[in-house]
Amino acid sequence: MTAITSLAVLPEEMSLARALAAIAPHGVRTGCRLIRDGDETHLLPEEARSLPARQPAMRRASGAARWIAHRLLADIGIHDPIPRAPSGAPVWPDGMTGSLAHDDDMAVAALAEVGDIISLGIDVEPALPLPDDIFALVATSADRMDRSDLHLAGRLLFVAKEAVYKAVYPLDRQVLGYEDIAVDLDARRATTRIGRKLSLVYCTAPRIVVLAFVGGVEV
Ligand SMILES: CC(C)(COP(=O)(O)OP(=O)(O)OC[C@H]1O[C@@H](n2cnc3c(N)ncnc32)[C@H](O)[C@@H]1OP(=O)(O)O)[C@@H](O)C(=O)NCCC(=O)NCCS
Image (cartoon, rainbow, N blue to C red; front, side, top):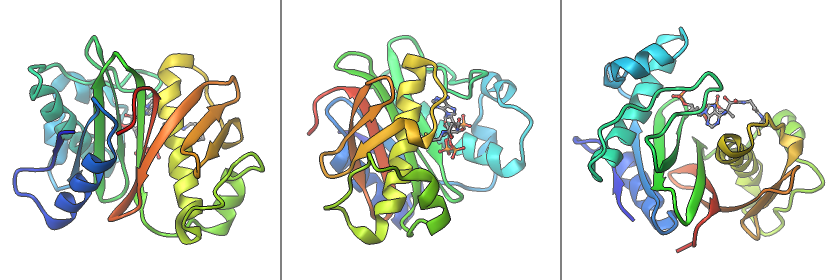
């Protein structure tokens, strides 16, 4: 699948773009961008108005993620803005589904035409172990990660649950906690408390990114 990075591509962007392209399910377009000074200027006026007053770093991150998404949309001839709904969810042009995420340094985006893929969620985090206190909040006895890289399994679980939440919120309009999502990293599946089933794909280098999706066919 198509993956894009910035125009002056930095090595970590190239590496992550390749990793995303390798995991993306059929029909899903992905991209990444290291967040740069001035990235808030990539917000279109409607997008800038839709974002709540926030710290400059957050606006930069939102601008970087939309920079990616604008290009992914432009590739298929769509030039619409992606404002933020009051719920926080991005509002995609008709017929499209997608998701945005950013950690302190990197922004990522994924989108697909609604069809086989019904909804998408993405999250990104540095490839570092999850602190024990956060792991205790995120993991439940319903989660399975026996065959995963133990060093990163906790972080992967955290990223997976956030990606699942972003994929299901637009469908179910329910605020979920970590305890409401059961993740099987080994089988690359997740189930929410109302029985919504998702597929997961992920990479762990150079960053952890999970794409969660409802519908679709994996590559
Ligand atoms: C959605 C949420 C998990 C995002 O987490 P985050 O670490 O703050 O931020 P990320 O960088 O990963 O993602 C931010 C993007 O998520 C997207 N997003 C926010 N709320 C969303 C929602 N309800 N549905 C889908 N996507 C959403 C937005 O595109 C946002 O980017 P933007 O601010 O530039 O528009 C968080 O904002 C939230 O709503 N949490 C409440 C529920 C929760 O935390 N449950 C436990 C996890 S399951």
